[in-house]
Length: 331
Picture 1 (cartoon, helix red, strand yellow):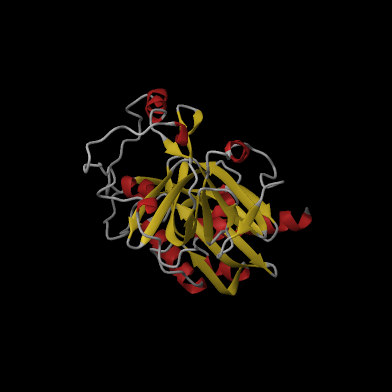
Picture 2 (picture 1 turned 90 degrees about the horizontal axis):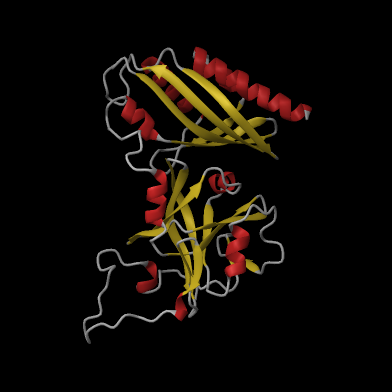
């Protein structure tokens, strides 16, 4: 307990010195000489000195910056830090002249300690908050449609059922997800949306690869288990590590391993995008979900179509399952 308190107290005091008072040299006592800060694939990683300079630039634009740590969760040598920052835009930032507008952004930082100092961090936040506050983009903050009405619309849309998995310090983690989609076929890319309150969410932020298991019609029990809050969802479940370590559930009708690229904060969820690095599928009917219920698609009848005129609703964005195997895919 003392070790935990010492570490979290160091984080809080250093953040206050650096972000609120601009004392960036305080980082030298917390960050290792080989420290790396990762902010997603679109931004180059930063070393300790580059991180200091980015703090200086932010404070020049927001000299009254105040950062509040709202929660710290510790597991082993890793900490998840949820934070919120406020300030007034009184200096140039991102090429935008000072507007004097108040700005508030929030996000999370995932920190890894090594021999008492921070060796690596991953940062995720929603840039739309900042861009909207600076007047670069405009979004609607207030819901224009009742949430229950939108939920009713979503229940009319039929989806497959996936279990998204990852390895977290040697332990398999996963949850049921139906917000899965193909982004691109060249290169092959997909996305999944994960609610931030999920217990698997921090593990996905720490992972480099995730697995997507498209469940077969005979895996209703698997779907219910991974939709629950069970402590060990993999207990008694047959699964195999993929080529890149992601847990792949035996009996699934299709499986993908994905190298995680971007983690995008969107409302109550994080959108994980990435490049498909392995794939397989079997001749099994998928489990489908609609209106709060699960269905076996093999029990449905296809609609009749004119001979030689089979429509292709995905003509402009073919799904992975309607294309030749992904290069490098597993047999």
